[in-house]
Length: 276
Image (cartoon, rainbow, N blue to C red):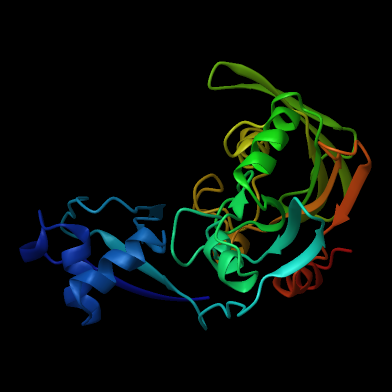
């Protein structure tokens, strides 16, 4: 990832950030807004994505530019399926559902089944295991497993800093609910760590928030990692992968175990950070 930067001029003070970006970069306002939406803009070292942010004279604006656009797959990789469910390896940069370009929409077309629906979701930049139901009835049967915490969800993450190997649990309040994430350090060095995490609760952004609260945020996390780490800013996305799912099948009670191989960008990051 490379950077472009400029300093706000006196005559531009009070203008909206996206308007100034459009002028300085010579792009349309729509494209300038897209850069903000992608959280690729820093003002005086702080990441800004609000459309109506007003600039001040002498503000330093940095634009993080992808060296190349992410390559999105034409087909979704199915890791396991039966008559009622399928589990896929979600690529990064795709929404799970609620969009005509989401994984859900792609699967419906790919499998020629318009009733396929996501049982749960991953963040757009997070890759890995996601369960889809092949009917509304199958989805309804799966929901109690999530509410009853009968599904074991294991993630892999690359984080900023040398995570303490003696820490094996993070337990904090998130939005009024006590939340627990179990942690195993797979490797670490002075600058980064490679962790395996198991969430016992399912709060929004739980892993990302827990790690950021302990000051070991996920590398590349645009929301929680802050803006002062060059290694993190250099990443195209947050290095978080839903690695494994283990759960009893709602109908047969057979234990289903599914593993999603690490994607190439994640493995490349591990290599760059000298982690294994």
